Image 1: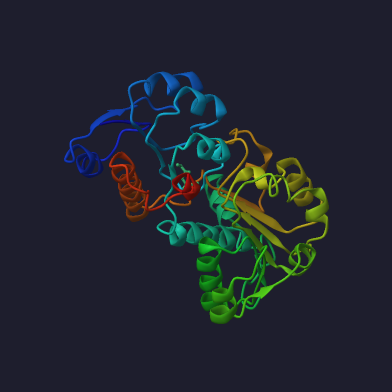
Image 2 (image 1 turned 120 degrees about the horizontal axis):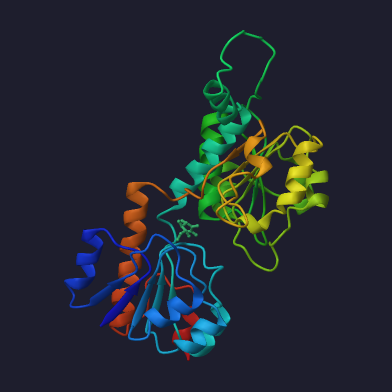
Length: 325
Ligand code: 8YV
């Protein structure tokens, strides 16, 4: 069967599909496909291997309702109209679990970078400013014993909470719809209201899905309730924080610093003022970007594709309701 892939694949991953008799058609241009290009290129496809930001919206699904499987090479699926895919009976696969540690590690490194102004200090060396030693210039803050707040404690939040607990003995609070029993038992994490999360966190890290409920929830009102010494971290989706409000909060000292692996839009413009702020660390969405993790993500995507093309239930399925029809 025919699989359209939105990127060129490593040979081992390609082989795991072609060895099963499938034919691949890969998009090799170094840019994302437009909506019409995605529709055009999947005209003879039985399955879509989606890497990057492809809009799997109503328009696309209406044009390609007969795809046997849409396999996302990501854990997030905010680029997909899942309700519409479910209505049309199209199974959507994702890659949960395998990127949790890598993404949590990215949040951890951003947290440390902001706390110690590491990116800023590195930029200072490049500017030739490694000169006179001033013992009170550019000081960071200690993380030891500070409170970690997690907005959306799932697999990734759990890994970050564990790292912070063991590395810096940080007590953990979190805001979720329900309890996370494992985090409460293993890490002594405490579930709190959103207001308490804002008011009590020394480091507040976002690990929620982007949804109608979470979009823009970190806005001017939210930042104004945080500690002036707090660090805000987002490795989930850029649209969960309001960038103008975040910038204002940083400029006015409502919060101490921010570390972002995600922005809205992406890529961030190179002249964005946040990039020059000493208390801000920004990365270009590299949360899952380790060799080990990216290969595992692709392997899970392959598992989903093989199952979907064989008419079986996807092992990692976002909308298992399609099988109840
Ligand atoms: C991906 C991600 O790199 O899994 C996710 O949701 O954000 C990243 O791991 C990105 O989605 C590109 O496909």
